[in-house]
Structures are given as C-alpha cells and as structure tokens.
Image 1: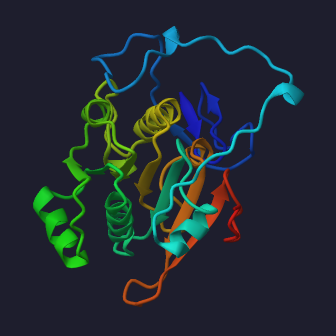
Image 2: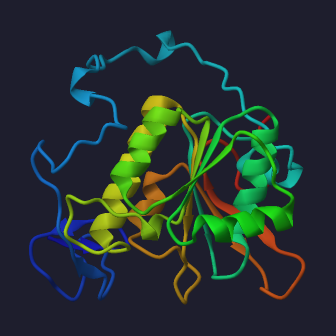
Length: 264
C-alpha cells in the first residue's frame, strides 16, 4: 500500500500526486495488518468482539453526561487542555529535541501522582538511571509514579493491564514498535498501528494517554498527518532551547478550546 502523509488516503499504486488531497510527493510505501489474527497476544486490550454491538439511538433521547476533569495542579497546563484531563483522552505533545517535553511530562506526572493517582511513565529512549537523575533534579518523589523502560508495545499493554494506572505517558511514540509488523520503529506503519492500539486502550479503559512525539524540520509532528486526526488533543511545546520561557499551545482539542479558555 501507499499512504498519503497529508490526508491519510491509501492507494495501491504510487504516483507523484495524491489523488484525494492533491498533495505532491506525499505518498509513502507502507505495510498494513490484515485479517483478525496477529502474531502474539495483546493481553492489555479487551476483547472487542465480545463487546455488545452499538445500536442507533435518537439524539434527543441521549442524556448529556458530565465529565469530571482531573486537575494537574499546574494551572497553565490545565488551561491549555481546556480545564484539565478528560478520562480516556489521548494527547499528542510535539516539540523540537531538547525543548523540554520529557521534563514537562515528568513534572506533570509527579504532580498528578502526589494527588493519589497512579501514573505509568513509559520511556523508550532513556534508561531508568537517566530518568532517575532528571527526577531528582526536578524533585519528583511521588510514591505512585511508576517507570517502564521498553519500546515493545505488547510489554506496554500487558503492564497497563497488570498495573491498572490512572494515566499513561509514552516517551516517545516514534520509539514504540509492534512485533507483528516488520517495519522499523518510527515508520508510517508502526506509528499508525501503535497510535491506533493506544487509542483503543484509552477509550475502552477510560485511561488518559500522553504521547510525546518528535517534530520535523518544518516544526510539525513527525509521521503521517492521520496521527493528529486519531488523537483528541495536539499540543506543541515551543521556544528557544536556551531561553527560560517556553510556550505550550494547542492546535486541536476535542474537549475544549484551542485559545486557552477553560470550559468549566
């Protein structure tokens, strides 16, 4: 298959121009998982076939539920999210190397863990000793903050099933891989399938996910554009690496405004 990195369209033959969105040189070769059987067993995912089939309902008969947002105790971070973290939301955080994405999410994780929530911080780019040094520098000593250093998606999902965390942070989505795909981590196929499985886990278990992503030279999150369509919120961490002040802005938010106004 050939996959358009701009609009996500799939075609069977390569061409210089995407037949759907018209973008030039955007078609990239990719493989795709077909059929229901996959190598290995993803124990962290529920049995979707056993779930009760959804039935059409009248819109006027659906009751509007109230979603309780989880506060991080960092007012600026909560404001960008629209008032806090919504259960089951998937957030993609992009930024240049060295801008402080991992530092920001370590501080956020520590603040939430201090409030009695169980946090699973997954790192595929650093060792446990490296992260321990950063946590000591930041003063992160929350008791409910768990660390998992792996890049294997099956290991991550199995740990989620065993630990039952309240929030999961994945650093980074480009380092995670699925063993049933032969492509290398960071490829279009791996990014799409791993993001899809994380999203399914978040929605079925009401577990918020924060996916840290690298950016390209143009300042966009690396990988196909469809990844930004799959998640609920897209944040960009920007600023000069040597500057003390950074900007966290939202370019997409299904649960709030992207101009920093809180919904509640």
